Length: 289
Image 1 (cartoon, rainbow, N blue to C red):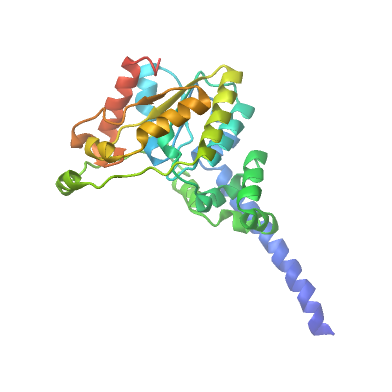
Image 2: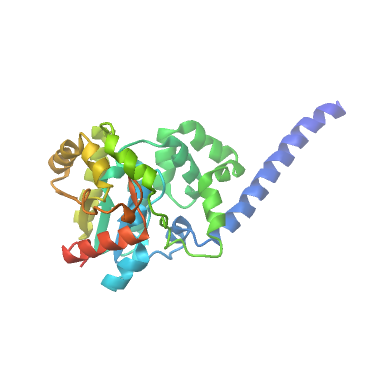
């Protein structure tokens, strides 16, 4: 009989330990300077909101703020899917004054990313939008996060909060220059197809409707690729046409703006100097007012 008493006691200790551990990690997250923590702590007020995946990180905030004298906030992340981005945008509009402008690189609409979505479980205590998305898209992960608070922090996203514990993430970009090997290989690139599903158009349409309702100027962009790679993409034009038909917003295509490989870290990402060159062009074109 005494042995059987250990079972509920063990379960109780496990539950209490999980809740204490989850509370401790929650306090750690709330002390970070990571972008999503700042979003939910009321520290993300901005005039220009920047959205994308790793290719969106070329929205280099220090340079934008220097050439526009406007505050920026960036919700980009490596592999960010559009469904997660939409919920983060909705959370931003719920918590802050609508930004004057929103810049979104539409090439982020090339994938779903449930593993990364699960990483945002740690922010569900602050966001009903994220909680509903995760429960609907990956219910096992969503309910596991409700059962175990420690589970919410088992992700790369949590590790990023630790990396930016004592420093800003506003300069998150690539510094390296594309090497000669990649330049040579670019002469023999095979056709590249961007995965695009019409469901992504629905997400973009929801973002466009939100911006219109709030008076935010929305720009759909294609950020620069290394030109030989851009020319290998065989469905970019059709994607732009679909987005225009679904949202009534034209996509401004800068995919081949930068010619010199010195401006790139690889085929799909500019480095810091390339980012500045691109942003200067957006300023000249009136996109960055």
